[in-house]
Amino acid sequence: MGLWRHPDSEAHRYRDLAHWIETARILERGRFDALFIADALGPLDVYRGSTRAALRDGINTPTDDPLLLVSALASATTRLGFAVTVSSTYERPYAFARKMTTLDHLSEGRIGWNIVTSALDSAARNLGLERQIPHDERYAVAEEFMEVVYKLWEGSWENDAVVRDTASGVFVDPSKVHPVAHKGTYFTVPDIALSEPSVQRTPVLYQAGTSRAGRRFAGRHAEGVFLSAYSPTLARTLVDAVRAEATEAGRDARELRFFAIATVVVAPTDAEAHAKYEEYRSYTSLEGSLARYSALLGIDLSELDPDTPLEYADTEGIRGLLEVFTRLDPDRTWTPREIAEFVGVGGGGPVLVGSPRTVADELERWAEDADLDGFNIADPVPPVTLRDFVDRVVPELQRRGRVWTEYEGSTLREHTHGPGRTRLPENHPGARHRRP
Image 1 (cartoon, helix red, strand yellow):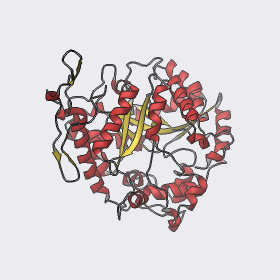
Image 2 (image 1 turned 90 degrees about the vertical axis):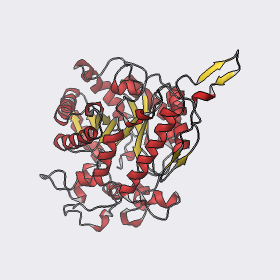
Image 3 (image 1 turned 135 degrees about the vertical axis):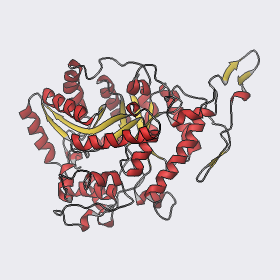
Image 4 (image 1 turned 60 degrees about the vertical axis):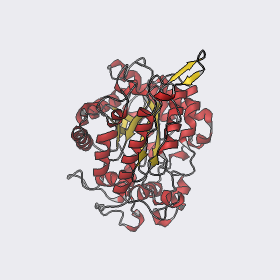
């Protein structure tokens, strides 16, 4: 928060396609699985009941639609995947299924979807609702949304439906394309999917909610889970809880991949890295952090004593995030000021500062202690911090056998789950809609 003011930051170039292409190519050079782009559909207006603080610091607004970037970035790369946040609360599943299939076609199978249910009242107001749909009902909507898109992606078209037989004049065999015939509580979709299946059919499914409803949803649907935690112990608590939900849902819990957000400030020596970190800290915005977290938590933090520990209360915001800072760790309490200072440079996870060896040691410690599969590396001074990570930390991780030197497979699901794994596994609920 506030680091857009740093002289090296190119955050203001978010409107410039060349900036995004440069970022994607940096990540592909570093053999990242994917570029993940978060998104939200409303301005941040909870703090002091106004958008003023968020606008002053450029928090969340202005912003463009990340989904529209993907085809261009896929054209500029060959192996990097792309995971984009899209809300199940405000999309329509029939049109959304076609959008994602189109991107999977154009990228040759490199698309992922971060499923969110949206927590901002401002999004509800501006997208036609008189009030925010209650937290747990948003997950009920999401459950049915998933059922519909699974039917469209996995069940509507048989594998050999497209024949393109010039001799007989048949492009598609009509007997192999089936209406999904869905009529539910929230959606009615009677007809066939508009797009023929893509390489992955269903995009790689990510999820980040860690409330009780969010953990249950992740256990049923997620292939990758994004975590925000300030300690490996807390991250392990969340990992174990979601794996338990996956087992309860009849899935192989080890199929889920967990990625903790982490910010890395690296330099040739520990001393140089810490000097760089202190420089970054000098640009952070306390009020910007409070404005962002007020919206995420659904609590106007300006109304609270900044030095009194925060207490949990059910809100229509991101309950899992509120739990992280209130009751999941019995040994730690957080005040609004401490939260704002903590997330100033990072994004809700650890800020790892040091030489390449020091950072690699810490990443390995987190991975081991928290049972993680990888990290969601933040970029507070774009693209400098990602470039530093690729140029300095990735070679150290490659020497340790922690990061591949060449991609194995070509689709995003192969990146996350292994060569040849282009489709959902058989025990995933989406696979149950496949036709024999």
